[in-house]
Length: 405
Image 1 (cartoon, rainbow, N blue to C red):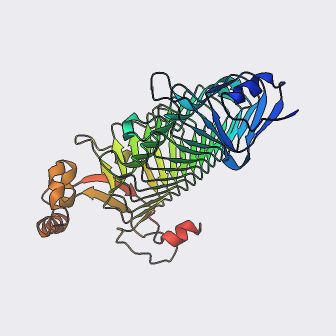
Image 2: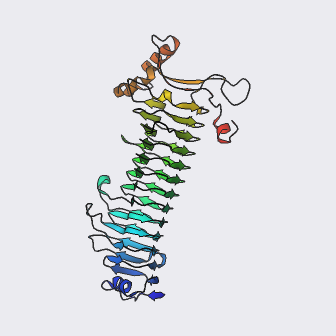
Image 3: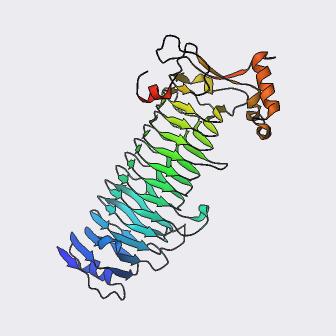
């Protein structure tokens, strides 16, 4: 059934139209402002043409509350939620529902964007989302999945928000999103079987961080310019049976951050065919992080390719390294098979003393450190600490990318 909402926009006429519509109706909204928060408790489609129909909240609470299955919001502009974190004031709140769609909506001046609690088989697609103009830590999350499974969150543009979070949620697809100028572009906790693919995250504190999770894949994502003291591209903390494949991590303080992963002793993580480029640190190992298969990656232009911050026990060497490209490799390929004739070894030499005392980094690349490093390699007074051995270093990143080796 098609309903046409009157152009008379005074008062909460939209709520009146919703209450009067039969379940399954389509409400087409003419351009204009519709004032007042609304609640939807029946299957319904609300379509604003080209985002010119604006649902303007009261400045307190949530603007659109959905408490029904089979609800669709599309082509709307949603504005002006409340500002209370403890109440999760949002543009759209969806709870205990399935088959809900929020598509091609513009959300602005709302503390939280789209809040999903116990939601399944739903579509959050092609939305533009920005929080309120607060400092970074006081903004709300752009999209939040809480105990929400088997949803598709794709092609959204998130800017100047806090985080996008996927907590206690499984089987979701997070694809083709763009995130910028936020804190965590994407943050998982206690989540499994999620697919994260073809997302682009730039100028955030953290790109993608997985915590206490398992059985997920992150592939073909681009994480760029995660800088600052907490800046990192992709992080794994207490994560098992993960695959990181074909991602590009560039211009970050730390490209990959591996903390006690894999967590389950009988499982491994696969880190393969990623491009780890021009970061301060390519991979940062923290705590007991072993049993990762690090294969076929490109390490290029990083100040330090690998850093292990355990000053007593070096764990990075206990991972499986093979077939990676290292721009610092100095070996030869006499038989032309694309594989270095000698293994690639990475050691702690003098130029890595900053890893034990960060203050030393002030002198990084200075003449005195360069001379110390040369002498340490020429005539070491003690056995340097080994960070890793790659027995089959690839000679050319082009060959690696084309799959010729």
